[in-house]
Image 1: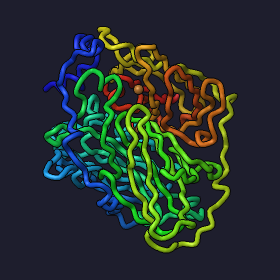
Image 2: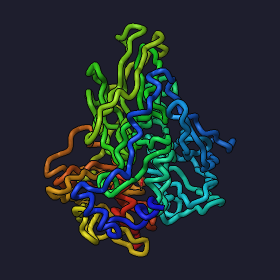
Image 3: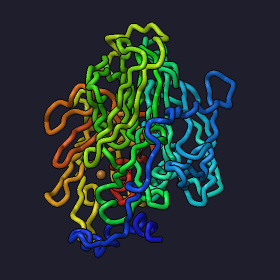
Image 4: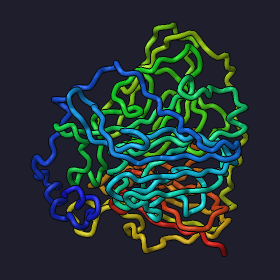
Length: 489
Ligand code: C2O
Ligand code: CU
Ligand code: CU
């Protein structure tokens, strides 16, 4: 019952609890289960989410069925955790489509509460967006039907019902959505799904002693986001992945509720980033560390050609405010299976010139200190209201959105700004051009405390109402979200 209050009542209703937290006296309402529980150390093979079967036999269309269901999983020996999943116990299958295909799906809600299914990163008609405006009540289905009109990219899907997003994702609802196109076919890069093209859904979780997930437990969790102390890759703690002694493509998704991850290899091994949220970069970028905020993706190529068979490399994931995890061990267990000559150039990339924008908007992300009645998390001083359209955008317009993370000494919180329907480009961070790996197509962007980020995008094709919000899901559920309507002029 408490949890419902937290999720729907928001911060304002909890002014007193907030004050108690601020003085550090809320008491032991949360018992962290970390200490007495022990996970299975690097003995489980990394599970690869299966590709969802296309029930349509025609080449130019696909049809999928997803069943939203309750389940359970044993994350710790002798403990059973109640979970949610799509067509299974935890997480969901990978949906793979091609640009130009007609996409149809049936989403069956087998839960006892409302859910939605949002296609994060997809450019699509508003009524199929799967945000809070398209609820799927318990025991009913939803049948989106639209055409894929965008380039190859690693996107994902997750629920988005008002006030329930964080909780439902936490319990297991999320999956990958991969788009392929002629370019991704043609490029000489690893593309054998599950073999040398590996999805890595990175999430962290916290557990109660009973083995159940410890979702929002107090005001601090709501304001700072729920930061877990166990790391899951594709739903499993400390898995091992066997790879060939050749190039391997990793599709990284920060699928956590509110963590910002720094991802690197323990041996400092470099890799090449080839794609950001919305698809391929202009050329592969050599890096040895990447930062992903909640909701962001990156595709990277790691070359194990020089590694002797038997070599192990650990993937480290650091929470920006939290712990460092040895997240995954990659073991080179067989000779190279493909002879790939990795490209030095991926695609041509047209940057949208700032001069093309006809409208500029500002969005102030604010987290007022706790204990202030009516405070909490807001955008331009407002909390999400389904009955209010915050911004009206003309169909076809190019706009610059300036996003300001106003932070106070009391509350230095990062935010992860996400827009539905569009892929945008980052113009600048505090007036400076973004680093090369952030110069590609993006739908989610980290905004550090005190930082101002300007993005530019074109709003084309589809009129209707879409969301923009912080992708720290506890922030989103607390109202750090707004609606923009694309209108025909
Ligand atoms: Cu990934 Cu509005 O969501
Ligand atoms: Cu989205
Ligand atoms: Cu936020």
